[in-house]
Image 1: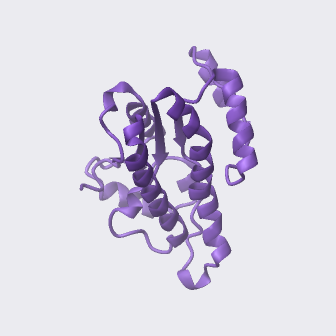
Image 2: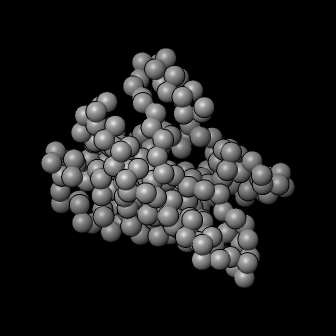
Length: 210
């Protein structure tokens, strides 16, 4: 599967990786996932939370609370479980970084009929800020990377017209590439960002300027 392919690619360039399947909306799965990670790599020092599902792109009067809950369970509840599990390791070492994938959709006028997705991202953003305040004195940093539209499977079903409009509204006149998002995440994990916490790093080609 895709995870196994990625692990193989990481090994080929000299990195270390180990695939673990988990439903992060379930605390027992998260405990098992991080237990496996500790066995393979030792105490947890860095975490990237990027789990999300596609928006239903559905008008509000057709949304059910179950629809909303699916987004909140994966994005917010999933982050909650992950943070609970790794913070003891970070507190023990007196250092640690957590990077969360947000979205520029929460910054200004949100996209129409994506209430489920945008509300989850907004809640996730607030959670990161709250914990950045609480755990900053302990040496732990939490930040967000907020991409604009990025060439991933999540936008595969969008009409070409929507993608073109986004490109034309972006100063760089292009969509983001996954490796550009990954490089921003690597920066927030690395030493070059050691005095940054509670921030949202927007990687959107200038589509959002705040």
